[in-house]
Amino acid sequence: MAIWFALILAAYLLGSVPVAYLAAKLICGIDVRQYGTGQVGGGNLWRMTSWKLGLPVVVFDVGKGVVMVWVAQLLELSVAQQLVVGAAAVTGHNWSVFLRFGGGRGVATAMGVIFILPLINEMTPWPTITCFACLVAGSVMLRSSPLPVMVSVALLPIVSAIYEPVATTLGFLTILLIIVIKRLVAPRAVEATSVSKKRMLLARLLFDRDIMDRKVWMSRFPFKDKDLEELNDGID
Image (cartoon, rainbow, N blue to C red; front, top):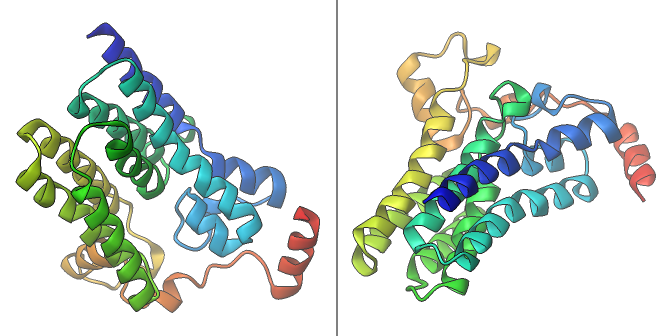
């Protein structure tokens, strides 16, 4: 039990490492929280700067979940306990102790947890397969990821309930709740001052933004095209 609690704490601290924030500050000289979605994650950094900078951050964020779940499995913890450790990593990413409990949305870290579980445990792969199939298909069709992310993660506990014990299903449900809560509790953005609370919460839940208009929401952009070219050259 002591090992489990220690892993939960370690997972939270690893999840709290704000790689996107550090990369944006050190390489671009910007605070990624002030641009795009305002989230401290590889996806927002990718959109606001360059894939050359965003991709490594996404990989690191995914790795937070993968590594901690793998360590938990090596220590012979149950699948449900591994999910709690993974959920702690997602929580750390979303409410980082290093950013005064601000952070990202935890999607990449959650996907790392979901991806690695069936690969290292004797469990059905169907929750993971369903989740990723829905995410990829939805993102391709809609050319946007927030809604497919929500639907795919929501399917996890549903599919798990068919094949897995209650404890495992509750673990998946915990990850879903962490992602939902993070979307809903963010401070109201300036762009949404004239939007009703119900409409704002619906937009957050489905589209991960305070307003329905994605173009307006993503208009906070730190660089002009010329600046981006120079940034990409610098990263090369």
